[in-house]
Length: 144
Image 1: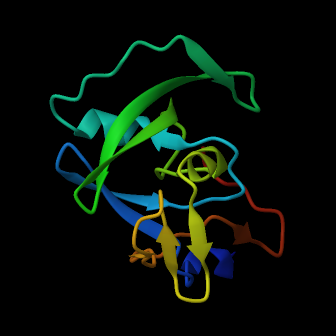
Image 2: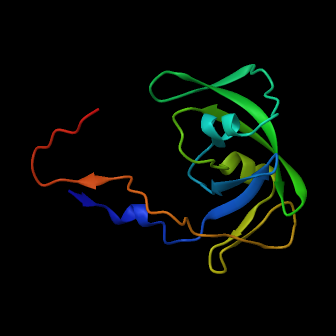
């Protein structure tokens, strides 16, 4: 089995933010229409009050994903994120909705992002290898 190169994450596209003092590494994803936060991130933060959800996002498989809001800290500034919360998401992903709301300008050449007219903020690479795709040359049975 070969692991595709997509999982190497060579390009800096991660933003480090804080949620109640805990570092959260966020994958910036312009291809994601809505911001997504893993349930595990919220569960790991103590004393975080989750507002009951009144809106839901429909997932491709027909399930509902709750939409709620959180305040993250970025360089000492409180930044509100309205996000869809899901146990099926691995990474916090500020999507195109959040980037548009905060007037983000992503400088790919210099690996920085400007948020709400702030000074450019450096982006980082993911520090762990992940494989999101496998390639096999013959029929293979994968366990559940």
